[in-house]
Image (cartoon, rainbow, N blue to C red; front, side, top):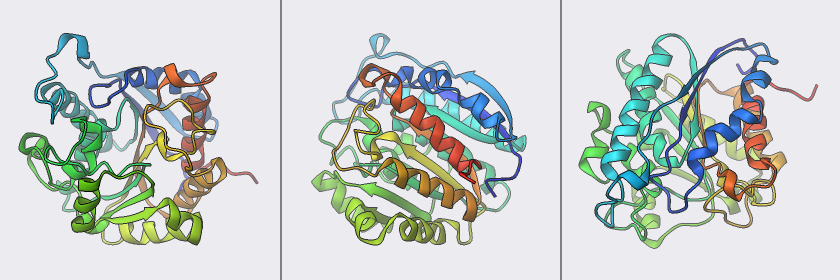
Length: 306
């Protein structure tokens, strides 16, 4: 499926309201500078760059409650992204959303879900992340919304964010998979265990191998769904391969494991959209992480060794 020609649309959301460290708002530029458009075109795809959606910056906003920082601005940004992702799919394109922090997935996945729901279908979700992103305002230690994004998409947390797009949950928990987790908050761990989400920790990746993990993830997210959205947080990678991310955790998946995952998804899954998030050029070395994001997108959309 990854080898077929696609009409791809790049959409940037330079949001850093949902994270604790500044700088991910420059992530879309870093990924573009690394040559995303040209490298996808070289694979035979038609690529359109929509540009960046305007996002309010923290300096102009009141952070608000400590358990839900910058909620109104994040809600506005995610609603704008939802509209553009849904439009892109309606026009027959494959949207790739560049972040920005992982709170943007509230908007991107809602857009994908809305597109298929209007056609009587549903969405599968594969979420690559070092963290569970399954906190709620009651369990969060930081109040950062990027640590709540997956929970919100599955209907848990702040009612306004949960209700984005007019329907909840956006994804059935039985069709959601997290891969690469190695850092969970205590309350978040309990939330995930109750949720019905399939979770492959880094230990399971080590023990079973990436091939088996991704094959099972496809079986979970791809059964009785209209397609799979891949949300890829660069902090799932080992910091040696991706130093430019705001919440690095040692012992992540390797360069080769990440590419293997993308290649298997390209071969075996119906991938309809993608997020590339948490690229922070301020913390990077010679745009290594931005280039990694581009290379992973290439593997997901058809690049092969031979």
